[in-house]
Image (tube, rainbow, N blue to C red; front, side):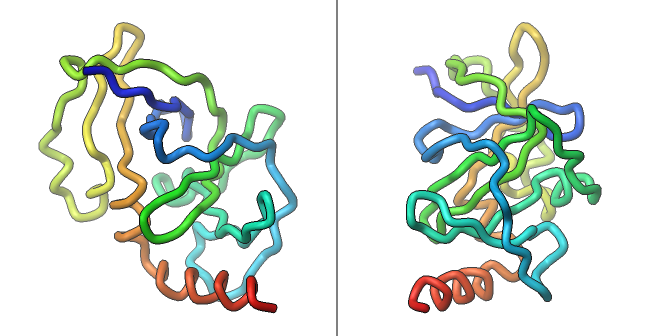
Length: 155
């Protein structure tokens, strides 16, 4: 069975997220900065009437801020716990990943990368697959971020 995934770039690496988590892909919005959040949380935005925390995925993975340009995008994701905006260098395409090309890798048990669900060995390179539910559940401060966003929505 194939898995459809949105492919995007962070740093110079390609990553994928299963399409069923993706609500939309947006041009970079104006982000309202929020003090005292983890360094990779750039603030909050309003998308289709909903407030979302915005995570800089390059900051999260490589500890360097995304260099924004005309290719930069925000991928809006719906997870079990919260909707988030993920800043990425470039959202490239939606592809079918045949299950025989998807491999579990020994690094998946590594504490800092539990959200890497596998690696797709495609003809034009490797794509690291991400599980957004595990990603948000392992993020430092996610409970506080959820509480902040909820409090803002009631204002």
